[in-house]
Length: 417
Image (cartoon, rainbow, N blue to C red; front, side):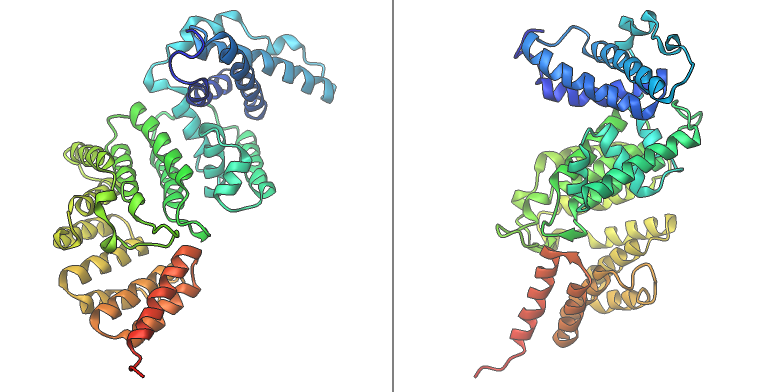
């Protein structure tokens, strides 16, 4: 390939990075040093390929360079520790660098194995997320720290602890005998959720996180095309993210779904998302991600808020509640019931959640209650609930939105002078 032809060098390296890291770790171990070796190989490729063109087998080129660099790093570590082991222990046989390195069947793709490793149950959720974004997503520690609004040192410690735990546990780098992608999907879902609805900070969303979550889920879907929950999660992400262009006003303030300009929704993403969930649902019992995707599809296919099929959404939430005891699902179900059967019915369900320790301090419980009180014609109680909700969120745009709703209700209650 000549310089300037085909995909950009940066894009190609981003695609190949997790594959190369996975291959090197699988073959030679040493997770930490392998990551350093791959990073150096990527830097070398960025310089050389931009100048000389991309080689015929770029993945094998990167594996070869990274493997040689790993040998150097292992030799250096050996010298530092004054070990007597021979350097030959880490000599890499040439046959392992054969052209076959570029012909890995999807079922044994190193990227997927790397995802399973990063999302291993032995790691805490914050470690799973950080390690996934660092090693599979290719984000720097600084980028991840910025996305999650924590100091760089804190994020660096999370990543280091996750790597150390993997090393200490002796987790083998291979596909599990009975691969269950549930942990991987949960991590990708958490990354997407934090990107779509920031829990704190001045921005309503972090598009770099949603884009990365969708990209990684596409990889998993490519490698596990027959798993309906993988398909369901990809569909859910696409259908949800499709609304993002209409979620914020020019000043960054939140626009609720029933007030959004639906012509701004991403029609291409909606079409793809609906097709994915439609293909997944007929294959056996539906899982939680498929049901959530079906709910998202009903929202996205409604031309106006009045066209929304709320009775069907209520039924789907009840299916979802039978699968999982999730308080946020119960809250969403209450909203759907209110929209289908009236705000009083929704308020009765919200009241049952008030003492749930998983939800009672969450701003959304009070925001939903405020909205339903407003619909039921009790502006004073709604204003109080909006104010309470605003105090309990760390998101500045959501806080502004809730305070604005409260102020508007206060204004409507004043008599003309």
